[in-house]
Length: 279
Ligand code: ADP
Image (tube, rainbow, N blue to C red; front, side, top):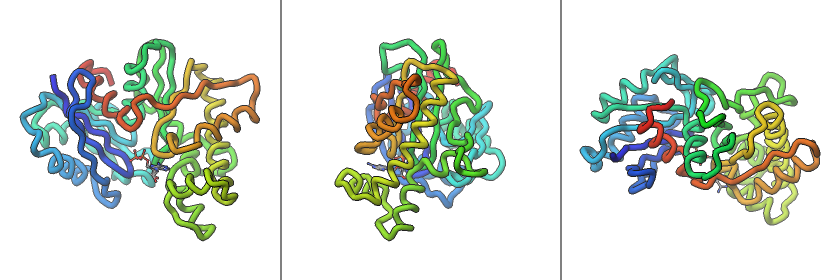
């Protein structure tokens, strides 16, 4: 069966046709952050109009909390959703097929788990517009808000959640505050080129992220922590995180791996969840 798989993030939205775990075709559009759930679904429907009739089911992975097919914002700074949105019901009306919805990082965790031969426990963390994650334990994807690491407290951040200072927009804001271009990719380039201001910004993110990885290791002791997201996979980020981990906690050594599926982890994961109806 062919599945229309959608990954709706705070910056971009991807939609793919997936068959037997293989991505056949993909379109990518900007997520209009000033928009609304109905508007985002309409935009995806317009971008995938030509595919109508070629898929039998739809999977949609979204940033935020999904319970029983209903969608709520966890952090309105990532995507603003007022109250609760009946995501599975509304998407089924728009796409004319049955819909399974899940959190985007949980879907990505499942995609990475299925893409690997390794059946030991896995934690996936994405650093992107926000900070999300998912947990696969004993072969099961944990649902609800399990893995919403971005909403954990930042020990140095007062009442702020961890993701407010471990995400692309924070890197951009810091760079601008220091009088530089507010494009995270440019900040990473500058850090790679040895520019000190940029190294300080990235190291700050890497240090907070390293602490999170050690805390996760202590809580769950996964065989591996898989990293994804535009910032998580940015040049040099994982190396800096490893260096911070080494400096932090010698007996606690998380095994970090880059996401095998890269940016398609959520797409592949939600497509599989549709077939197994596991949420
Ligand atoms: P989403 O949050 O929509 O799932 P991404 O995972 O691409 O999307 O994360 C978007 C964030 O990652 C943005 O802040 C963007 O600037 C940043 N980003 C994307 N690609 C890169 C890159 N190559 N290097 C550094 N930052 C990146």
